[in-house]
Amino acid sequence: MGWGGCIKHIMYATLISITLILGAQLFVDVLQFRSFIVSSLFFFVVLTIGIFWLGKMALKTPNKQFFINVVIVNVLLKMVLIFAFVFIYAKISNPISNKLFIAPFLICYLVFTVFETIILHKIAYK
View 1 (cartoon, helix red, strand yellow):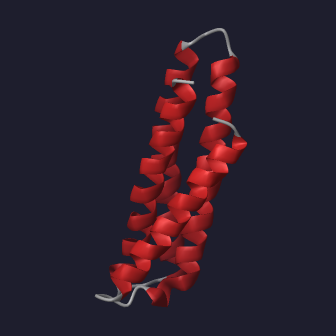
View 2 (spheres, one colour):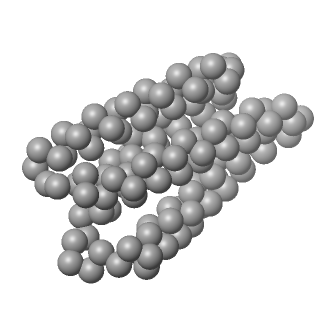
View 3 (cartoon, helix red, strand yellow):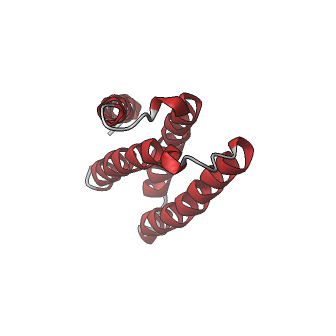
């Protein structure tokens, strides 16, 4: 898979995330967190591009175990970055009474994780 395929998958993930967030809006007012939603989408796009690039680089090395290491480090780093991202937002915006800001973030997380897995699978089995 080349960069074009990666961008296509990122666009699908973004469109699906936006659709699901708008669907959630029917039940709960999540659009009050627009800036956080846009930031979350940008955050996950950058992470997905980063893991795609690392995965491509890992396959070019003679050590085939390096790809597995990249995937494991990706999971750990992603968890740390996600925690930091949500923590910083919560400290800055202080949404004490409304913890629903996490719902759109989790939607983005789940959708982008699925597409990231698809991307890594296509890279690994090319």
